[in-house]
Every structure is written in C-alpha cells, then in structure tokens.
Length: 560
Image 1 (cartoon, rainbow, N blue to C red):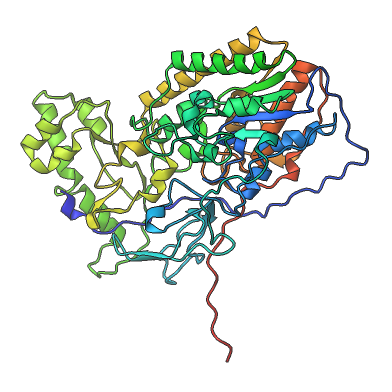
Image 2 (image 1 turned 90 degrees about the vertical axis):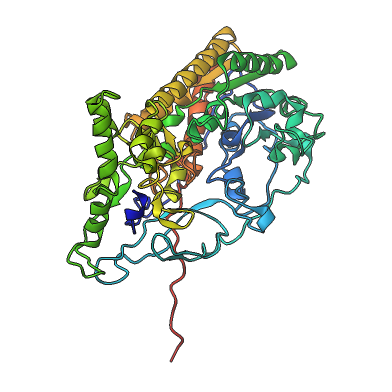
C-alpha cells in the first residue's frame, strides 16, 4: 500500500499579510487622571505563569517582557497613585531562548518565533508548477536547511535581526525589589513548591526560569518570594497550564490534566496564603480561557492536505502530476485496497457499513482531510491484518473532519517523510501521530475541565468579594473568538496571530504586545468595578501586533 506514493504538493500555513500595521501615537489633550478607589497600588506584584511573565512567540525576550500585561497595568496605576517602580527579572536577550525547538547539546540555540517567508516569489519556475511556500513560524537563529524527501527543498536561514538567541542567564538585579513573579511553564501547584527552584537534576518540578531569580533556589517558593516584597495589591493568574499542556500535546497523556480536586485545593491554598499575608492586601484574579479556541488549534485546519491541479506533467506521461498522485493514493495498492477491506469486514458482519464508510480514506483535487488515528474507534488491527498484513497499521484510521482540531506544531510535520522514505508521508500515507490531534471527546474533556476550574475560581472570588476582583478573561476571549467584539480602540482585532489584526503571537498560545494590552484592559475593568477605582485603560492602539513576515535577503549581482 505505502509504496505507491511518490511526491506531494507542499503543505504550508496560510497567513494573511496584506496590510501594513501602524501604532497610533495617541496624545491626549488633557492629563490622564483617575482614582484608586479602595485599592492601594503602591506596591503592585504579579504572580503567574508565561502569560504574566511576558512570554510570547515561544520565548522570553526583552520586548515581550517590556510589554507584559502586568507591566502595562503598572503604567496605568501610576496615573492614580504614587507607585514603586515595576521591576521584572530582565532576561537581557533580544530574541530569547526557545526551549521547545533548541538542541543545546548539538549547539543549536534558537530563539523567538517569527513569521518567515522562505521563498517570497509567487511563481518560482515561471510555469505555475512550483508554488511558493506561504509564511509560517520559524525560530530566530534557525540555520539554512535542505531536504530531498518527498521533493528537494532548500530553506534559507532566518535573517537579521532574528539571527541570534541566548540561553537564559541568572538574573543579576536586586531580587528583593522584583514585582513580576510570572514564571513560564509552571503549573498551579508549583507556586508553592520549593522544588520549582531546584535541584536541576532528578527533579520533575525544576524550572530554570524561576531558579534564575529565586531568592534561595531549592528552598524558596515563587509565592513566598512574591509576598516577601510586602505587596499592597496582587494580580494572580494561574491554572492555564493545568489544561494547556494536556491540550497542546494532543491529549496523548504525555502531559497530564490536573484533577479538579487537586486544582481546588491548590488554588484555595494559594489565594488564602496571599489574603492572610496582610489584612489590607487586595487582588485581582483571572479565569482560564478556553484553550481549544486559541490559534494553536485553528491555524492548521483539518483539511490541510491540498492537491491543487496545475496542469503540470514533468514525467510527460499524459497525466497531471498531482492527479497522478491522487490516483496512486486511491488505487488498490493505496487506500482503495484499505477501503475494499473495510467493505469486506462490513459484509462479514465484523463492523456495520456505516462504520466502514466512516473510516474510508479518499483523496480528490483540492483540500482533503488529514489522515489520523482515532483511539475512540474499535481496533480493527487483527481483522485488517488478516486480509493484508500491510493494513495492520490502519486499525483505527480515518480522515479528519471539521470536529477535529489539529495542533499548530503539526504544520511542520504534515507532508514530510518518515525515515526519509518518499512512500511514507505524515498525514497522508502515515496517520498523523496522536500528539498532533484533538478528537471531539478530548476537546469536550478539556472544555469541561476548564469550566470546573473556572467555577472554583469564581466561587473563591465570591467568598472574598471585598478583597478580590474577577477578571473574566475567558468570557472576554470568547467574545473575540465569536466575533462579538471586532473593534477595540478603533483597531480591528481577531483571535489569530496573522498581522496586523491578530492579538496572538506566532506560537499561537500567548498574546502579542497588543494582546497583552487588551488583557490589561480586562484586568483593569475588573479592578475598577470591584473597588470603585477609575484607573484609565491602556489603548491597544499604542501597542503593535505580530510583526509582518520576514524574508531572506535577495541576492544581488556584483556591480559591473
């Protein structure tokens, strides 16, 4: 079956890039003022994960930190009261360090993700047969690469200023004067776990981005360090990673989903610790957004396999090259044989014909569903292998449909060869691995768990309503996703990372600068409502969105 496949059309992410973006220079005619109400912002401290730290585009770097939502909030608090300077554990790196794609052992240190257009040309060969790749995420400092399977393809290095990256260094500033205690990657329970700071080996809880600024690595805790600064007001936003890691790993089980009981206990403990630290301290907490609606799960679509007929016949056999690939896939040595086997099992009463039809794989010109394995299907491995041993790998195979979600990370895998074999193509002849797909049952599980977590957060706020404000980020994010909110401060917005209107960074998970400003608005509105304050809102028009795609420099001929 697998030997029939030769080459495939390029699969790429499509990013809308037609508009230049501008940052409005808003200069109010009158001084901005406000009142703190019953809140005291003199010493504002933020506690959270990557969303709080200013992590974006897969890394922690200077620009992201400078535009963290607590930093933006602190600037607004300065309009209503005399505040201490808002200090963050500066990373001192232009492009940061991307731990997901770097390989330090091999000397590969990569940084933030950017939109990278490796080709630029819309018609590379002048005949419409070789199609330019669309812009997609690429890590800063990525070197030039080449491949030969399924077709030869060269990719230039990511150009300046995105041609550097740095391992995180120890924070050298005054740790006792920090205000931002956001640590990328932590679960809720790690805020009170000293193991988060060390030791670095044999410790599943260790997080180097906390260890670099911990007051006493291995002994201190994130929350303990934060409260040691004697805050008068605290923002607390944790719990996202308790569902996010499970979701972004395709609910494969590689990263577990925190139980409701554990979350409730850990959340209540953290909040009570803050409230009991000072009878006068007040705070704002936030709900967890529905992670299944973020761009990480909407950029790569379920029907990403694109076979576009272009009238090209490189082997001059009288058949369009792409149509030839389709014919091979649908033939009896391809999925035609698989589909016939399913019909045979239905005829023998092993499965119903409806079940057989649901599993069949067929390709046609245009966009097609990605081939996946569905663990909720009955395993037909034994039955199929009895018909043809080559079918043993397809016991739970079907094509994706609109009810499935595909991860952004799948974009770099789809259409690539397995073991450099042109007959083994990810998502086409080889089902996409579980870690890249969320099935409907898994999506519902994640949504239900998010609802359970948010219900507990709301109950804690209700029980302490005189001291805690609720920033319902989930509700506000849903309005953006559903299109209920399309314009903010005169700027069109949407829940993508496509410039110029997307509120997300290129990793599809974290906000960009403009998205952080929008989150700051949500927090400040909650604070104003709960404590009778009139803190002015930041304008998202003053913050830029995801940068436009970059391309490699165009080679020029030497002067004659």
